[in-house]
Image (cartoon, rainbow, N blue to C red; front, side):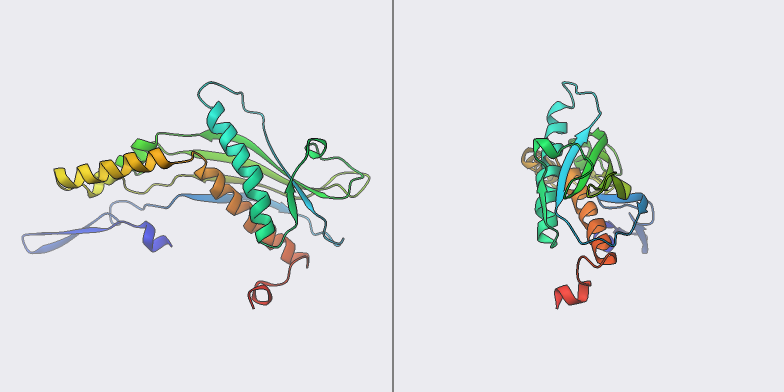
Length: 226
């Protein structure tokens, strides 16, 4: 995966090979990184998971559309991806959005703290972090099955669009630049605006699967795949 993320170009100058790209920039793909995980093992039987996505961010004309898109994508995407991974889950109903004690389920709450769309054209045309998008979320898995709420998992996911070289790095002639520019424009037009939410969901599901396997709620990977 990382090898496909590195761009390297070579040119011959006076008989010598000069490697450009990886030697000048350490580029990275778009990704979502889990930070500061706190995990408490649970010996109880597994329970269904109600997924809630919240935010305390002030809504503005600039961020409202992207915020709604990402919240909806996370709520729906997480529930679906968890089900695919073998974890019974559903988007929380109105009565389930606030975790509460004396319940029957687990509550997975994703709170969006930072969302920045950046500049998609700058990312595509220039790259190397220019116009980078960001989505930072705080995730807590609550156990509602007692007289008090228990935090089973608590961590942060920071997703971004990465530092890949833009098409300008590969546009060595006007024709090439025109082709790459058209590609960038087409890609931006087709973008759904919640790529960072998709990356965040993948990171959360991976963490949930690891936790479930640790608790014995899911079979080991080799058994599941076998």
